[in-house]
Length: 281
Image 1 (cartoon, rainbow, N blue to C red):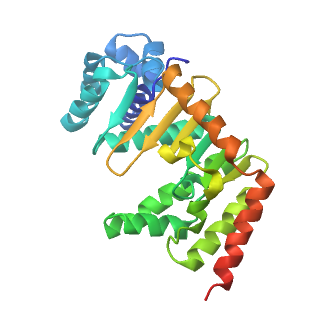
Image 2 (cartoon, rainbow, N blue to C red; image 1 turned 120 degrees about the vertical axis):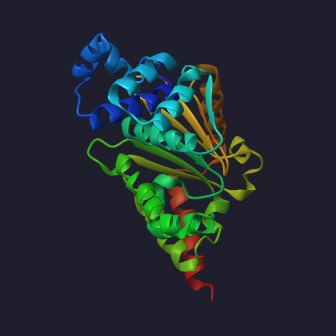
Image 3 (cartoon, one colour; image 1 turned 90 degrees about the horizontal axis):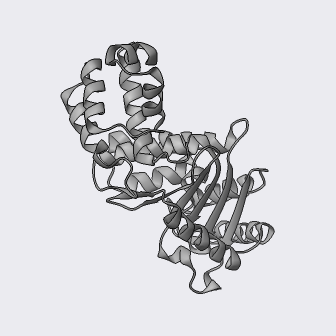
C-alpha cells in the first residue's frame, strides 16, 4: 500500500464507518454495488482512492445522510493529490481522524516541537492548560483533553511505536499552566525519556538557527506504506506524502539532531529546569 495517501485513508475510514453503521459486511456491500469485495476493501483501507462517483454510489447504497455524502464527495475530488490542506471544519476533523489512524499504525514517530511539549508526551494538566486557553468552548475541553491523552496509547501499548521527541529548550521554560503543572509535566517527560521506545532530545537555546525554528512538524513512518509528514497551526493543517516533500523534512531532522543534546544531557537539562521551578518563590 505504498501509494496510500492520508486523504484516501480518511475517506476510507468514513466509508467503513458508514458501512458498519448500516450493518453490512464488506462482501454484502460489494454484492449490493456489483463490484468485487476486494475493491471495497481497497477503498476502505485507503489503498485505492475512490472517485467522487464511487463515494456517492457507496453512501447512497448505505443510506447515509446528504451532508455526509456531499462532504466526502467533495473530499474525494483530489484524494491522490501531492498534499492535503485543511483550512476549516469539518475537514480538519477528518485530518485529525487520519492522524490518529496513522499514529496507531506507525512504527516510528518523530515529533519536532520547538514551542511546546509534544502532544504524545503531554500530561492532562498541561494539555488542559493549552486547550482551555486556546478558545475551545468550556464544554469541549475535557473531551479534547481525553482524546489527546488517549493518543499516548501508541507509545505505551504492547509493541509500541518508537518515538523521537525533539524539543526546544524554550518549551521546557515556557510557563504553561503554572509552575506546578510544569513540574508535573517535566517529571513525566523525564520518566518517558527512560522508556525503551522513547528518546527525548533537547535543543539548547544557544544552538543558533536550525530547521525546527521554521515550525513544528511530525514525521510518521509506517511498515506498509511511505512516510507522512503532518504540520498544524491554529487555522489549518497539512499532510505531505510525496517522497520529495518527506525527504526535505527527513533532512531537517538530521540537521536539528546535529545541534541537539544527547539523551543523557537532555535529561540533565530537564532536571535542572525542574529544580529551578521548585526553588523559585
